[in-house]
Image: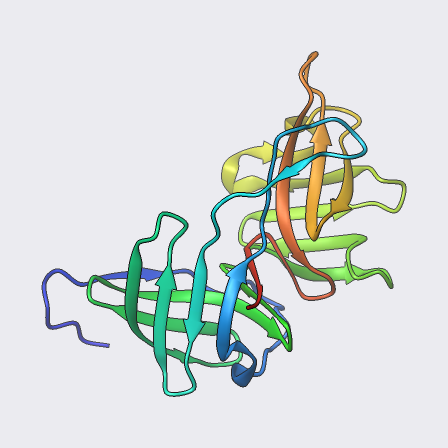
Length: 199
């Protein structure tokens, strides 16, 4: 692709290897993000708090509109294949890994299944420079060599996971401080991006 306007930037992020293909028609529609912020980190029931949402409209004619949680509006066009959206706006061309099924859309997919159990979450997930094992006993292991991190060490011994409100929460207690990292999850398909539901 040749870019003729100097202010245009290209942001590319490849789809993780092994990603299941999606039907590009499943991205068409109006979407709202479904990621809550949590105000309590108390296991086993973190408390979500409503935050302003972001909205996304992907038209059947290739039109693109995103309304951010701050009310900002970005418009442009998009094309889709089975793995990536190419979004062109006035300031950039972005290649975004995605996963879609009827009723759910995830952008910026971080990890895809390597080997999963029947629930579609328990098992091994892999992405660029990261592996995450969600073990059936609730423990977490894996590594992120690109970040110089061994996940079980980074999160502390005894790190655990649970799914709450469509998010995968990884809990840890390094020292005396309980922390968690949350990932959006699309069971059986994708982990670690931004999840949207139809409006």
